[in-house]
Length: 391
Ligand code: NAD
Image (cartoon, rainbow, N blue to C red; front, side, top):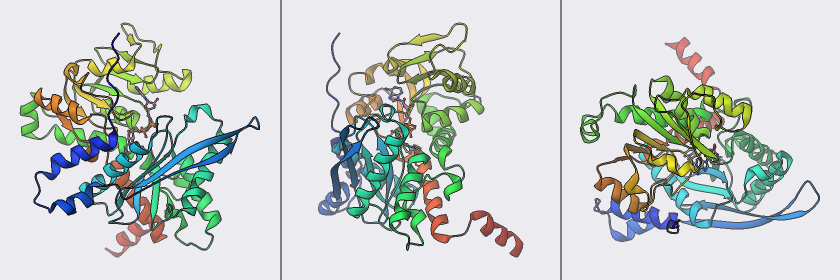
């Protein structure tokens, strides 16, 4: 079997996307160059004592794409595939995402090059806390400087460890809790931050399906109900988007996870699939007559459907598989799942792409409110009660 070509640099892809958009502006070339480049990137290693007593060296990064607006904002990723190139590109996407939705942050991104499934919870806690200390020592963490949030492989648990580490080392900082967002609600997080990105994906798709030009180009009827949908990646973003689309009456005909995909032309009961995974650890072997299992999850991307939602990782639709994508809309829930070459092919084939910086901006938007709430030291409930009482 022939191998697909090597995956392209994500940072080069970001620059190419930028240049395509910049061609439509009349800004001076020098200024455009300053906007497009990643300002700072920090790579560091630190030791981890594993539960068996051995020492392992851990590699980590934090990139600040633009410090034009502060703090810098962007997720923390735990992935064995993490590279400096990836964090620089993902930080850039955060700059443009925040600008697009009017959230006054610069763009950042960070991560640790590990597969979190291969570490115990106490080991993950030691990694996260040491990562936070390293960021602090380098001036890469703080409510007014750089504020991480959950991303691929991390959740509110890691954010709680970061907040606690920061507060321990900065007991005098009254705004300490605003050093990170996506915290548990009990630790001054904000309701719905966990679901926000997936919900935003749903709202973004729902809005697109009301726009006459889009409906005409894609030959789709208005509304989400009845649309056939394929989702790749049932993590935080993918599962919340899937639940919301299912609730709205869409037909989720295929769901893909890292260990394989499931497909049924009549649609899948998303809450039941998620409950099955909770119980068994996998979406495979879901008990449904006529269910078709697909060994290689990448093959699910090519199932004919109205809307394909890549919600796992970058570089999933490339020049080699773009000609076989059989969706009318590709909705980028993940960051940068379509390479620039693949984008050109999809456009030539009349397939509409809903871009990541619009579609997955729900998370950073709600993070902004969490940050504000932490700085204001008053809960939104109290604020709205006072307003209600005064009106
Ligand atoms: P997550 O770690 O919660 O979930 C990712 C899921 O994808 C996991 O269940 C994993 O098993 C699955 N997966 C990995 N490789 C796969 C493959 N080849 N095929 C099928 N499934 C695969 O991560 P997340 O927070 O949901 O993030 C997903 C994407 O959304 C990332 O690109 C992230 O940068 C982006 N994003 C996340 C947020 C957020 O708030 N969490 C915000 C904006 C963008």
